Image 1 (cartoon, rainbow, N blue to C red):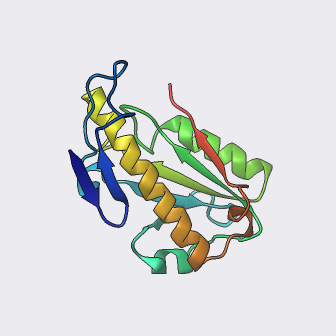
Image 2: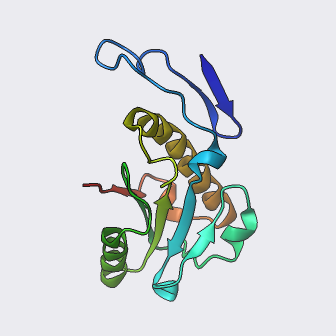
Length: 157
């Protein structure tokens, strides 16, 4: 069984997503149901989120992205959302210690139970984040995204 969501690609439940160690596997839910949102914070907008949309290049054009700064992506885990205190603390510490672009991924709608569905949704969230970074790189050229200098920070309890 395969499910496709353009422009993010197609997802199936064949190996390695289903095997002896993972006998139950789900397909990711529709992107509208997962409802991934992206918040950009920089030193210029330390406390005010700038919403980014993978589908709307205007959100990149008007964003405070600095192409010379490192870009960090913070993504929560199961049964959480992008408004958790630890995420705000982590973003604040990154911005206190260096000029940076910090993108907070909030996919709280897709991170709800059952656990097996949330696990499946992580595949879609990863594809959406990849699309966002690709579009960001084209719309607001980030030199540090070109050679693997992007730092993905995933913290969860």
